[in-house]
Length: 108
Ligand code: F3S
Ligand code: F3S
Image: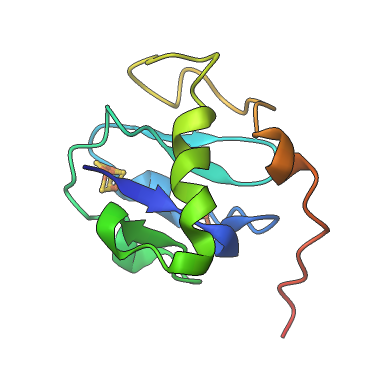
């Protein structure tokens, strides 16, 4: 099991979560961040620090955001398991449907 980043992260990319992860497994895409499903050790430290509640335990992802669970897997199709996000940096490997999402307006 793993933690998953969902829709509230899109176009916001607050990145507070990165600072908390003890295994550096939160990777930056062009429009959101993704948790590596195999590298995450389920510590849960990232979940409470996200200001928009974008992070969920895999079993707790809202039904409407189920596709994001797969996105957090598909993002790593090309990357594999680098074993650390900081050395990888930003990668424009968002799944196509994420790339195609309309701009997300977080000003409410
Ligand atoms: Fe995104 Fe929240 Fe992290 S907005 S970058 S999941 S702190
Ligand atoms: Fe890191 Fe969050 Fe997993 S802090 S180890 S991505 S639960």
